Image (cartoon, rainbow, N blue to C red; front, side, top):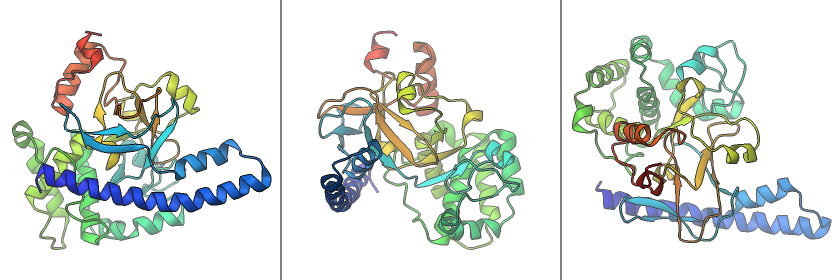
Length: 331
């Protein structure tokens, strides 16, 4: 799939999703209005529910220099919930599994005596198909190698492979995301071939789509688009006053890849922030007032770092030199 075709496909998917959400929200809002008319009371919780039911005030389009981007279709107030997002694929961190403290599916905090536990029967049911595949395989060599090398992204590839084999995900579900392949430097990183061989050795089931090319292409997209999931403490207001993306791996409960949040471009002085309150479901919040037509941007890294440190990290981790207004000013 070419980049243009992928974008067109993504637009159709997004348009379809927004239309469905619009239809659902219309009925939700009607019932909310009826309740309000009869009781003449609208609580903050009800306002939040109405806001979440409304279609997201955004569209996906092209930017002048950064490819695709997300733009406001109306003015957005500071602190407003822009939209929520469920992951395409997610996986707990090594420390979370070791401490037995997150749900294996939604990454909600729990207390358990087992490495693999679920917070509810609903999560267990949703994970059953791919988890049944996982349980048929011995992952000892794969897990040991990734742990010793400090590799987290191969576990997202592992889970996605199990989802593909079980039929709950398509092999091309990440194709809309960029980049389409690994850089020439990454292709020759020593761990790449070893992890690929370990992954393929784990599967006794025949799955023609899980080729080396599929693995490298999926890993490329996951490496660039995966978010480090850290559950927030405190209120939204506390987060807005100190909106800095933490990059401490020990603080993360896991990693996840999303569709729409992955289309947000970077800015070292962002107007939008992605947060996780209870589980892996992401929330995009406005950090300041955003005008209609303005691009929504998030910060991929720790925004508190100095100019040179930010540029070095963005170049090494994401493959671009930041030219946002903050960086151009030398701040």
